[in-house]
Figure 1 (cartoon, rainbow, N blue to C red):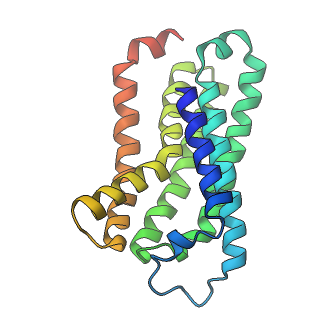
Figure 2 (cartoon, rainbow, N blue to C red):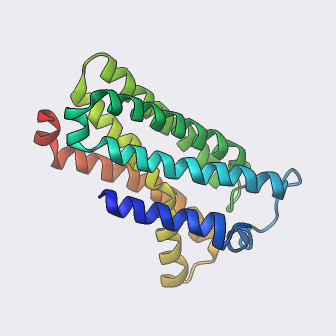
Length: 202
């Protein structure tokens, strides 16, 4: 799992910070930008968003290592707080970008929902571990961590709708956003159910 995460993070950073640092491909699909849209500032916020989203994905993956949990709880705790801070920065930066979302208000609403749900799940996970409810902590962390894959799922679904079903990009992206949120929730609950016994013994 960690190898896949590192490869995906490397690709994401290369694509967004080097290959297409001006987000020309993504921005080409925006129909009518809002009057308040400031490209240089938007790009800087996007860079912060991407970097900390990758950091959240990496720190989250590391903390799911059973060896780290059992052998080095101090590192696990510290790394967990780094994950939480990263989630906050990702959602705050997303809050700025949401009003300028491709697809308009309906997509903006979806992203703002994520900006509330994701950190809330993480806070619940922290609350549970402070109460020594380790099983509940792991379940809420799984729910939280799946939201690190939101962007991946969005692009996968958007690609399938655009190239497979022939939908226009804006419609495909809207379906991708809501589809990704649904996948995050469904996959997390499936993982919790499938690995129920293992989660109880960690």
